[in-house]
Amino acid sequence: KKRVLSMIQPTGMFTLGNYLGALKNFVALQDDYECVYALADLHAITVRQEPAAFRKNTLSAYAMMLALGIDPEKSIFFIQSQVPQHAQLAWVLNCHTQFGELSRMTQFKDKSAKHADNINAGLFTYPCLMAADILLYNADYVPIGADQKQHLELARNVAERFNGLYSPTFVVPEGLIPKTGARIMSLQDPTKKMSKSDENTAGFITMLDTPDQIMKKFKRAVTDSEACVRYAEGKDGINNLMGIYSCITGKSYEEIEKEFEGHGYGDFKTAVGEAVVAELGPIQKRYNELIRDKAYLEKCYSEAAPRAEAIARRTLQKVMKKVGYLPQK
Ligand code: ATP
Ligand code: MG
Image 1 (cartoon, rainbow, N blue to C red):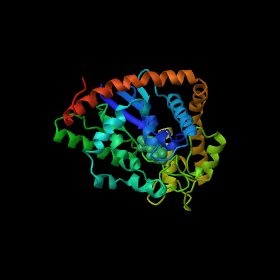
Image 2: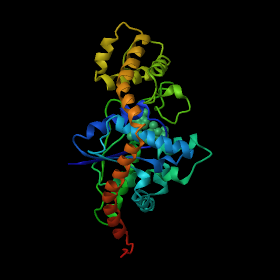
Image 3: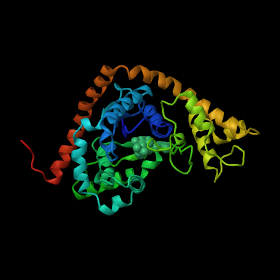
């Protein structure tokens, strides 16, 4: 079986963007691949976290991943900070990545503009840690949202560079980017991606929003003045709603256009809201059961870390030897 690896930051409750762009795909892949998933809590502190909230968010994120269908028996689902090899390999990769390459990363530019008071070195070298995450596990495929494409490209370049400089060491990974729902946009500014760290909460739907909150946010979603449900350039708001609806119902854009012919945006927004409510309902029910069972969650992540570490340790040892570090006896 080919191996898949992906991670998500526990920086707040997941959004509908995380779910449709990445997490729903993580679940489906478990049938055909050997999957390694993790909560990227090392990445999370590139932005300042309040310790108590951070701890709570990490546990909630873990429970939510199980609730939406990550199977802790079938897949390895661990917490990044509990496997020390990530930080260790990241250092080696930092030293094989150029300042200029990292300077071109659009996420760094966006995030440093947004957090101008905390442009830390970790935020800048984030792609090297992400490369380490992937390369430690010899992943063949990396399912990600479209916003992570540039980072994956960097991981591939670093892997090829290392392999060329020493000898073949890393598997050069391929991305798996879902076609529909690859990029879910903010409901308030459909030219910007939906993000859980957006200060305008009306822009995103979280996995734990109530049906009432969901319906309200869709009703208030920014659209255009044409009043015709069709997928077209310049209709960012409607395109985004059609993407969400298509992703959940499996309907094509033509089918959606037909379904809402002669209807106004109000009807369409209601339908999209209802589809989202129906999709999230059963997930929220399972989440509420899981989050109460702290002992079970702890058992799952505590058992996953050594399984991940067994793989990571082997890769790191190979890397250290190639670089020329003296082996410890
Ligand atoms: P942050 O704003 O803190 O970076 P985020 O919502 O971007 O949070 P990440 O943990 O960076 O979340 O990303 C997790 C996964 O979700 C990645 O695979 C990313 O590509 C995907 N993703 C994030 N936002 C979207 C979106 N709006 N549409 C589709 N996929 C997304
Ligand atoms: Mg992100």
